[in-house]
Image 1 (cartoon, rainbow, N blue to C red):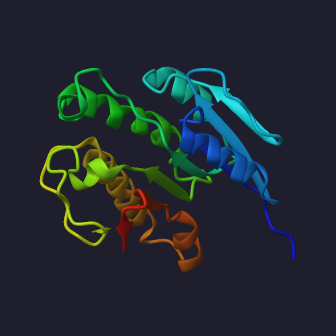
Image 2 (tube, one colour; image 1 turned 135 degrees about the vertical axis):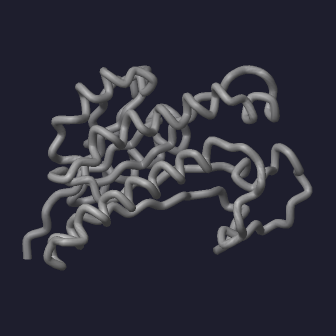
Length: 196
């Protein structure tokens, strides 16, 4: 049986999570690992890199729109403004920039004829509001409703859910096998303080 290669685009590849993902996927048979960051990336054996500013929509489109190999995205990038933990994470401009950075990666890759099948977003404890009310119950539960506070994680999740819904609508009239290939899955990964 022949298995086709998969390519994972690891966004935020200079960070702790990004570096761990690069090492992991570069060592896996059948996978190609491509790290993305603004700055040069320390690459493990077998990994490749793409230097790209995620805030530059035109540069992202130019670098990603023609790719026909990227099947998965691990998104571990974050833009943080100075201003303290709570102030920075509640800042509307920071939320807008973080959403736009994700859009700049996903939109050029998510096309009807493209191979993109799965996007994983790395999130942190701020999804549970630990920066606003640090006395939350641990372990937190992923099945809990969203913590009612403004957060770019919610903007990013809503964006991906909308992309998934658009794909599903477009594929609805297609044969079952085509519909299956047209699916794009999304995973929201949160820290070890949670259980499902």
